[in-house]
Image (cartoon, rainbow, N blue to C red):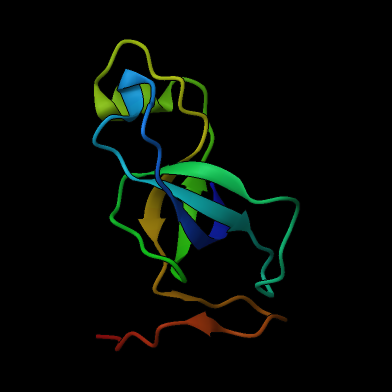
Length: 101
């Protein structure tokens, strides 16, 4: 899994059946300092993420077929989690402040 930020939404009038009823989002991979890495890519949203959210994305062959329970799933990248906060030694903390128990 990798960290990314949702930078936009994608609407298509004609899509592969595997995409029907699924939200397509434009995501930008980021490093631990929230700086862009590489080029934006399209991800199928499994978590109801929105523009500006920091998310976890996964790009594993066959993962979409298992998660969405469809035989043919030409889906390379999926949003698998919405990140509340990231803390790592040597890096600035970012995200929403979540109270600890």
